[in-house]
Amino acid sequence: MVNTSRYDTTDGGPETLQRFLIASESDTINQRSYSTKLLPGLLQTHDYARAFFDRCSAVMGMADDSEELALARLQRQTVLDMPGYDFHMLIDEAALRVTVGSCEVMTTQIRHLMNILTARAHVRIGIIALNAEFLAPADSFDFSTATDSDNQQITDPFENTDTVELVERTFDLLATTAVYGEEAHAILARALASHTESGI
Image 1 (cartoon, rainbow, N blue to C red):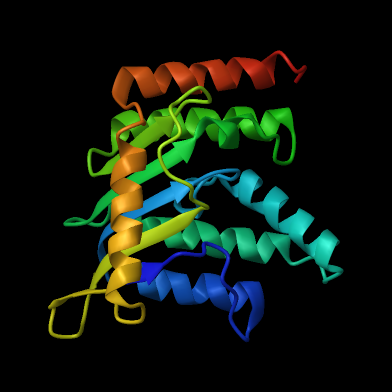
Image 2: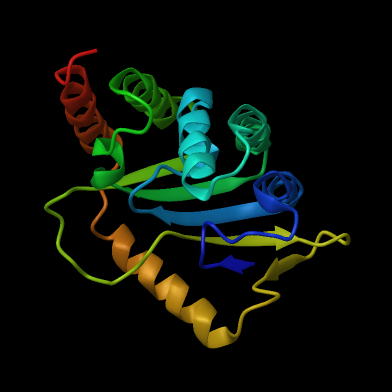
């Protein structure tokens, strides 16, 4: 399954989308994603998600349902602990520098990412540094392989082959510019310090 737009909406609005993703991602066996300005939903803390949805509601002039949406987003994260799944997430360092909510929210969020780096072997997080070489133009996207009711692998049931190949090629290029492990932890520590020094 290919989703080249992280923020596609459905007729039921944001909450319906979050509920749909819970079911959709429970069938995912392999997911690759690239995040530019915001952190992946599957890695967000409650307060980060709530702050994000709060701003969305304010800008769109909608009722504030940020708490319900944040809780739904957290429910999605149970898939990270399911056996047989594999996640490879690329995050631009810029997403670590943007203050979502407050410096305190960002501090907790970045520490959460640090824990995931060491606690979940099947969740691979690559950080693309601010000074990394530019190799491919891309907005945030998700690309996943799922299983059907007969447990057969299904990739890209909706998009054409050319789109799938483009997304895969783009992800592979971006992945060559990312750092992992201790190098990724160092960038997280640098981003953490920038929010801490901002004056919590």
